Image (cartoon, rainbow over all chains, first blue to last red; front, side, top):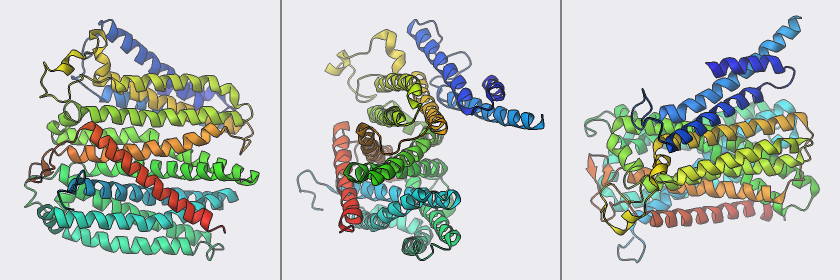
Length: 91
Length: 462
């Protein structure tokens, strides 16, 4: 939800430039930060295995969620861009 | 095939015939989707390049069609001749399905020839010609869906398969997942094959105008191939989840037991596809005015893909199976304790999702570069064209390698936990053997495609 809203806001702001890339970049930065944090945490053995609330060997959280986040952030940016266009036209 | 012929046995013959059938089927099912879309875009945008792309690709499809049928026939002959108990059961169980399949195939083949041979005759009635193409694709997809039902039934049959209705047998636990996975994979494969054709034509073209066209064609082929490739892991995930929900022991065999190393290699192959696609965009973005400024981001994406690939390559253990001797010589080869997490699903899931996400991001970057800069078609780095031949080679090898994984997932069953495979070949082959067979299939497929290109575009020109 945070990424969707983030994408929406950046999409509104960057108009008239194409908004998609900003939402995608937001998701990439977020995703890579999580990956680095997880790898460092696992290497230093400070993370629980499995993470609290997740079943052992869960793949949905680690595989499907990052992709859904990417789609949401990009979709948010696209919608934000459209809203921006509409607003400017009304002005 | 006599069983005493050295190195050749019934399973191998069936394996090669089935894979070649599937590869050509994937091409003749995937490429027409691409062709009709391009023909429509040609009509809508009045850009003649789309029309030429669609027509030249259709020429290849028309020739490849007969090879699909040829290998399908070979596969059926081996099944009927050497796997009689199984083929008797499957043809009786799915008799109405095979009847419908034959009928649809007849109509689909007719439509394919009508679509191809009326290309010029219906030039003034494009709407009608495109409608024939759409119908051809709908029928092609239906044909695929029917056979996916038979294939998925073998791995995940309903309870009491002998008494189940035809619909229950067809609508089994993994039918949806397999349909989804194959549909997306066919589009990706079709795109990469078009890119292969374009790269071959680019590298052998002498005219500047042709080189510009084939550069553009390669770009479109790669564009579609990558767009579908990005979605493909999600389809694979849905399919695997369905297998897991049906019987977790199959998933264990696939991911943690005898087939786990196959999946490690499969991961590397898929990773190479992502890496190759990003590398193509990195090389070719230079021919876009102002595109060089995006290269820093793409270089970052290449590094992420390389690291992701490395994580995917790390196995859980080096033991060949869960029941292997834990004190054998291989047990001395271990992964450092601190990095064991890299061999587990969470790390692999994150690695693959990172690769998908950065590839999709680069894809959007590339589009942005095209939207804001002028493209110098034909001025592409030759290495990028070689990448366009590398990608289909990896795609074909991956498909030829994944096919036996799905088949061997049944273990010693023709139909999982219902009909045992009593032949001497009901065992999981060593990884090296499967890789060699997949390699041979890839070479044969490329030789045949080379012959098709030669027949269609070199012989025809004289």
